[in-house]
Image 1 (cartoon, rainbow, N blue to C red):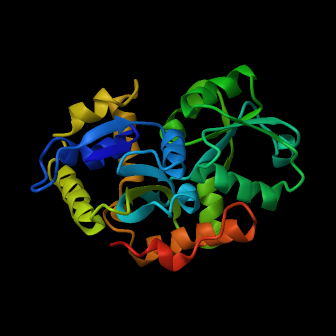
Image 2: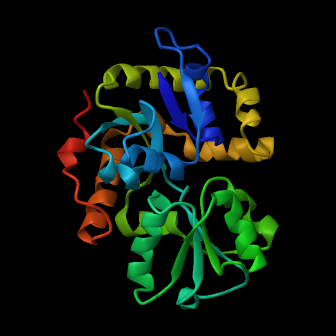
Length: 278
């Protein structure tokens, strides 16, 4: 079975056992490590692997060919994207500025657009898509005026002398009361989703029961991240929603997609279609 997910510690932690043949009955996994910007577009163009990690914000473009798997993803509290600037500035200072974002179909960018509409409706900013690894250096150098960052940047942005303008996770949780749906696992519609769900849950259970066994694998793909930052990353993004979205997780996903569609930022999704796993 072909699968694509990011090299980030939360994904390698969750999928370590599945990738390394430690889940009984699971097929051999052929892995592609890809940034979520790539998988979002692969899924929308129906040319990716059978199983992929994408942004929840990209779901409306993929549901004709893929189904949502209610585990293995990233959803939680206190883990939202940050808007960073160089120096102390106000929200209004974003008007007419160059802002770097990691993907034009990411949940992070969707949250940012929702926040801008509420807080800086006449911003007139220029949005520039770049690899998330390049965003903080670009803000630091002045290439862009602000940057939307995700992942381990929450723990390292001070190293670049940058300041946090807004934590979009805090804003979303205060505004909606729900956790943030960031990354989703999807599978082609001809995949046995119930079986895949069992394999992913077994892989995550194995990771919890054998926490040190995946260390070498995680650090191999951690892209110069320190072991401490990698552990913080896992602790933040792997939680009860990674094992099962549950009612709270489902409500969060629905809140994001329904609100964004009402704002004209996403195509409308039939909520019932999201949960029709076969």
